[in-house]
Image 1 (cartoon, rainbow, N blue to C red):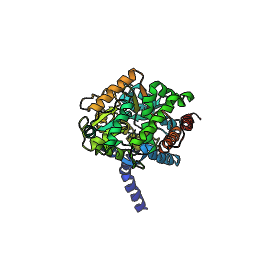
Image 2 (cartoon, rainbow, N blue to C red):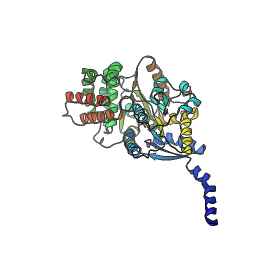
Image 3 (cartoon, rainbow, N blue to C red):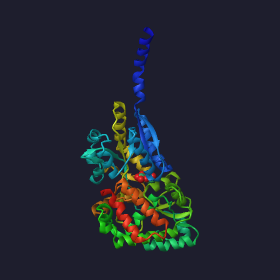
Length: 417
Ligand code: GAL
């Protein structure tokens, strides 16, 4: 009896230590490339410094598609992680199902209402309660170019789609890959989006993909977009199948390819490889989209959790993400711009400064566009369906344009069903 009670005593004495072990937060995300890992490591360190344990659950692949599939399986079997990288309209989907913890007290304490632009905070709330914390604002409509390759070929960075085709011809003739592209559906859809922005213009793009207007989705402008998209294929290389986005960026970094059209997380790869903006590589807006800003906001949500220690860790994580020092550190290496309006851009490179200017300009002229290929415009079901349609069209020259337009319409409208 005495032995049992001393065992209980020993156990209860060790309880605080055990509880302390639970002072951790399991985080599901897809930031696994060189640049991404570098950026998120800063946050892991900060958590450690605050006495919390970051349990990493990174799922690589397909710009989050693999991570989200894993998340679904875990959440539906009653075992969600404590935090997860979810963004755009999908935040609403999870929130409405009652999975997400409220962040209202952190938001109040840290004054999120004053720090985060309204266009951003709308995404973070469900029924007017904060349930997500934002990291950054990525601009998707960029073209990245290897300076050396352009110089050797003797061409200027393309400003318009016509320029692009002229320049690409010369680059091809000189033996380089003009356009680096991996044939994952989301990479192809990113290219499609940037062409659509250019060909359709902001208003028609908005009507089609944001307002989900049936006529706009099958308009002549959509047909033209698909034609230009198909025409670009001849400037990509034969090894595209299965190539992920960061290996694709490496082709430009290493001078095998001249250009890549990709969001500014690509800059993170150039920086991680020790390259300098303006010298080794150029950031130019995707052809014909100088006035537009296709935005992609990364955010974390937190799953409801009964354990008070975990809740504390979750709140600490949410708070750290919006701390000014982290906002600078993270965005300097991630390629995006800070999401807080009060961060000084001193020390950021020309690409980031350009991006900030472009964001403000686009906001003032109604040229801010929620990214179609990065889960900001449409929900998950539509997103996956659209990826399939776009990829099938791009990879098979026999797929009919009219049929594809009907499929695009069906994919985008799937959200409304
Ligand atoms: C996007 C994400 C970016 C970037 C990219 C590639 O969806 O918003 O932060 O990491 O995927 O992984």
